[in-house]
Amino acid sequence: MAHSEKIRILVVDDHPVVRVGLASMLNAQPDMEVMGSASNGKEALALLEGIAPDVVLTDLRMPGMSGLEMMRAIKMRKAPPRIVVLTSFDTDEDIYQAAEAGAQGYILKNTPQDELLDALRQVQANKRYFPAAIAAQLTDRMSRSDLTPRERQTLQLVAKGLTNKEIGRVFGISDKTARNHVNNIIGKLEVSDRTEAATIALRQGLVSFSD
Picture 1 (cartoon, rainbow, N blue to C red):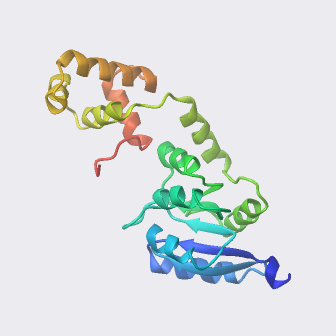
Picture 2 (cartoon, rainbow, N blue to C red):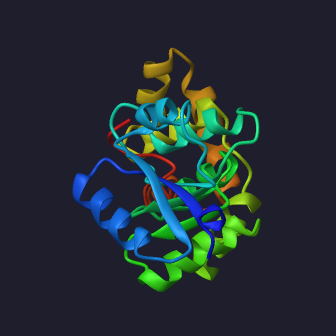
């Protein structure tokens, strides 16, 4: 293959060993070339000022600037590169946010090498690459009503075990208003009670205790 036809890739991951391993694997392919690597979104955006990769292969959670923030910034660029997410995280919310931010592919880090290479080639060919299980989660997440920012905050407190009265106190609202928020959440998540809402929220990545 002529040099110019190689898929030019920028690798973004906060683990040096992962970056080196990916670069070595991708550069060994006759049709791929790693143009650079970055340890977070900020570094990647700085690199993009000087290089024009075809595909950015990025992790989601990184210190400094996350993959999602970086993807949103890349989407605003003129003729943006395509993006494939390579991550260990597979909650419905991670997948949904990545797709919303412009990812054309979503691969888990335990995926076989051949599948990762296939994903990069397909995305380069202007196709999307979401493996069946990931695509099913994305469809499921997209079919659920979006929670409002206040409902998300409320859900966070429900997941931590706060009562309606305690939630009301945190937000400076009445018990009744707090109860309405909780009932709306239960309805939107299509669950039977607040315990189930909390369980689903944690499992699907709608809330996390690091927030």
